[in-house]
Structure formats: C-alpha cells, structure tokens
Length: 358
Image (cartoon, rainbow, N blue to C red; front, top):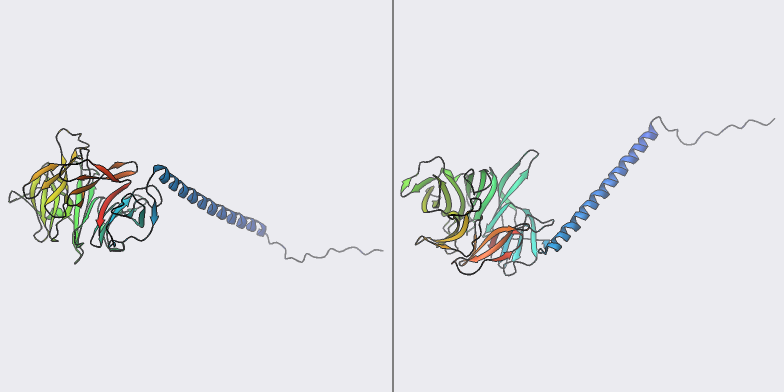
C-alpha cells in the first residue's frame, strides 16, 4: 500500500491576523506621500515657469537673488521690487545709472522701506489666522534686523535721517487712505544711537503762531529728517487743516510753518520741501499735486507733474524728484525736475519705496 502524502509545513511564519491589512495600508500611505511630493514639486515648478513667463511677457526687468548692502561701493538705487515672480516685494538693488537694468533681490520683504548711511527701516506684516499684525524692523548694512518695534497699523511712510541715526515711520491706525477725513495715523521715531523710542509724535506740543494748540484731533504723519539729527519736518492735521511743521526732538515740539502741506520730503541741501498739495477743483478721491516749498521765502512752485500724487516724494539730487504712480504691477517710479520745468518721465517700472545710497 502506498503511504499517504503528508504536506510539508510552510517554512515562513504564518501571517498574523490583520497583518496583511496593515501592510496594505502602509503601502497606500507611502504611495500617497510620494504622489503628494511629486505633485508639490510639479506645482512649484509650474509656478516658477509661470512667474518667469509672466515677467518675460510683461517685459519686466530680470530679477536675481544676491547680496544687497546698504553701504555699496558705487551709487545704487534700492527699492521694493514689484516685478512679478518669486522675488516680488523684496528689497532689491540696481545701479543708479542703470535703473532699468537687472535687479539683485535681497530676500528681505518689506511693505515700506527706506535707508541711509548703512541703516535701513523695513515695515513688515505678520499674517495671522484671524488678522495681520505689523512691526518696524531697523536693519544694519547687511539687511539684518537689529531692533524690532511694534507698529499698531498698516504701514504707509518711512524715512531714515541722512546720518542713519534717526528712523521714522507712519502707520494707519484706522482707515487706509489720506484722501478722506476718516483716518488716524501713528508716527514714531527711534534714535539708533541710544534706542530712545518716541512712539507717538502726537504727544509733542504743537505750536501755531507762537501759541500752543490744545486740540484732541491732532494727527501727525510723513516725517523727513534734517542733517542735524534733531530737526525734522512732518504733516500735522488739526481743525480740518493740514500744516507743514518743523519738529524738535529735544524740545518735543511741532511748530507750524505753512498750510496745505502733506507728506513732506526735505531736499539734500535742506532748503526746500517737496510735498503733495490738495488743489481746488480736483476729484476728492485724487486731490493732490506735487509741489516744492522754499523754506526761506515760503514760495510754492508747482512741478510739471499734474497727475494725482499719493506718495512721499524722494529727492534723487538737489534738482530732481522721484515718486510713485500706479502701474501694471502696483507702482512705477517717475521723475520730474523740482523747479517746475521739464516733463515727467518714468524711471523704473514695477517698483516703489526707493532709496539712493552711495
């Protein structure tokens, strides 16, 4: 009789209950993660190509990442780059004599920016789950943050004194436009030598015609600094009027000089102020024209720029003004002579918040 065949036992350990299911789940998870990674890479790659393609189609300047310093070897123009692409909103540098050339992007993003003598001011947003908050960062020559100060509203103006020792900025505490009357600002100054913080210039004494102004509606904005690191100029609004004021940090006073002046900018030689002036008959939503005031004679000169200017103009030298106007990607920088002659011309596309260095 033939012996019955007995099956050999399986040499592998039997699958424990549920093990096969766990292995399948693990494989599925790994596959999902791999697909997600591939998808993310593809999206970023496509977005990068789209950014480059959009920039090329728009004829915008090439922008490359690199080192940016606030103490350049030659004269440079720094600006907030608005060219579409991965470096949008970053502080970028171009040679001053080739402002439409390739830009070097710093990697530092600012809503408002200015710099002088190796000191920079960068107003930034922090995006929260429910709301945005803002702060002012004082930067060193390598664009590294040295100190940070709270900014209780939307950034709108910033300036550094010629020496780099004083830094000032303005934010909207309520409202987001100077065009109407329903807004409130907060203006602060920091001395970078002692880090003394003047957190609200509305606490300074306003003097008009030699007399103190006692009013609850005082509003201050748009600081510009003189060379002595004590005097500054700004706009004060009270009683429905705006005034150019001369500020004295040591005395904590704001003395009115001239009416209907907003967002002043002191010339390099300290003799004139460029500003935006509300003109009669203009659209209430676009009421300003660019003027220059001689501080010795209080004589006003209208520039050749007859479009609405909602900016704190910058002097590129003692004779020329630089300012922003709306452009295809936010703002473009335009230039016009300060003496009322000439014709406004575009200097830089897709840029705002300029600063000349070197």
